[in-house]
Length: 180
Length: 296
Image (tube, rainbow over all chains, first blue to last red; front, top):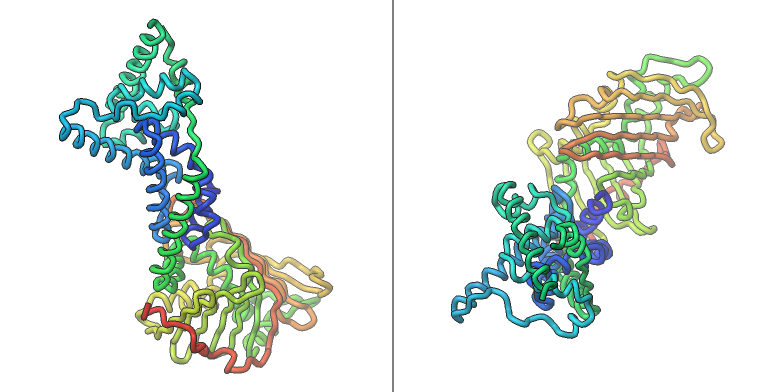
């Protein structure tokens, strides 16, 4: 936390090493979340890229009020949600029902991943975005429900509900696959 | 049925790594954006000082640095005289009569990167002051103050920028912050002496027999420019028993301001007293290749 504050202060003074240190510290974590939200490697990479470039652009004026990690996660979530909305608009235009790109994952990557995680990624794509976001932010992003509620602009109980429904849906999807 | 904990464990194991290509792309674009941001915001650099000074705890820390100049008036308020050592009234008289002074300041704070400044040297005469900020043996920034014309000139030697401004001492907060109230040594002296202080006795500092006074009374700082909780202050001043001139000033301060815990430590040493400073050395001479920040 203190390290982050110092890094941010250094960035405000134009320190490139500090900027790179922040990137190194959070890049994999943010990429994991972005990929979890979107299910797409290339899009997830684009989002992480855009978040860091925007952060660098505003570094001089940046004021850290909470945690840097929380701030970056919020940026990734907001951008991921924008992408999802754009996909939905595109899907509507194409008269498609799914906002997620079918078969968009790289087969080679799937092969490299554990089979279990691959199934989890597939299951994540099948649950509503708000539920997916709540589950990922809480479990993988280690965010509290009230923080997620603030980010999603809903009440804590709504987030809690989304989390429970999301988790149940994932269980159901993964168990049904196991039965098959 | 698979338990929820199992699903959570699985989600926790989700892990993606950035590729070398992605790292390269992000770093390039990010650092380019940062560089561009630095260039476009360079014109605001003189205001950094002003912004910094608006934070209560930073004002305290700044005061701790400036306080070296406090010795200019400190002793005239001290009624205690030690027959076996320093006669404080005499110290006050000598300091007051000093034609010019030089002091080195080193400060570490919890709220500013420690690797940007190694130390600063401040030269003061009755009409001028000059402060050079050093990093790795090079002067990175300089501030020149002309007390007669109320002019401050700032130089950024890295970017080769400068800015000169005239201040109305009655209306301009920036100038006031430097030379009145908080930043006025005489005012600070009054505040310090309004708090409790004690004589530390004698000790040898770098082979010189010295005598010191100390205050730990936060009230010594007087009215703060904003709320500061858990304020702790520790200031010590050591004077050469033989010459009667200050040789070392140490300060430690901590507190909570604007929801953040902050602390600072400052040391002022390498004092030179009653030196004749060449006026041309204290006047800002703008190098021909330096650009006025207001034109950027």
